[in-house]
Length: 229
Image 1: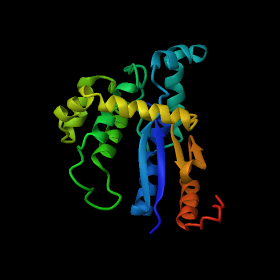
Image 2 (image 1 turned 120 degrees about the vertical axis):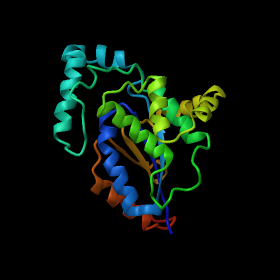
Image 3 (image 1 turned 180 degrees about the horizontal axis):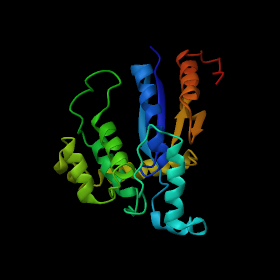
Image 4 (image 1 turned 60 degrees about the horizontal axis):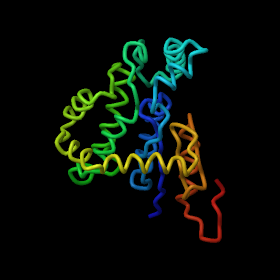
């Protein structure tokens, strides 16, 4: 059976990646073991004071950004957004939760294969829990204590996380993600890379577009036949 590899770049503090999670889930549900999604991180909110406080200064700063997110969320009723997001809580950087999640992803915390093909891994569950903790519950996921609380609720060994971070492994893997995002000219979050880099989708990508491209790639054209997508 053909296998379509998808490299998925996102920033955990990006609302569009939060919105897109249902599309990721739909792809996994439909294609099951026909797709392999490699979750990577890019840095959009690496310095939120600069990104929002300074970058949105002319548009109302944090108040303006909060208003923008509320307007966006109204168009996507499948997500839950706290009315005081970026007002009540302002994470300093997405790099901190990215590092924690890379430790989960890289340090052997998965206890065997998922229960069924396409089922969420521990990393999948933790990444989604981090996004919901911020956007839905307005928790500061850049804080170590909050990260540990979320992880422990999913049965994750905090000691293993600490060892992975202290050894430098998680830092190395996160640095590789950021460097690869630059090499691949990732424009923002979320971004999907298919067909060995030949196809790139960025932003609010609909499921039907993803579906059509995956279907074409699963058709497995010969070496002398290019994909029509």
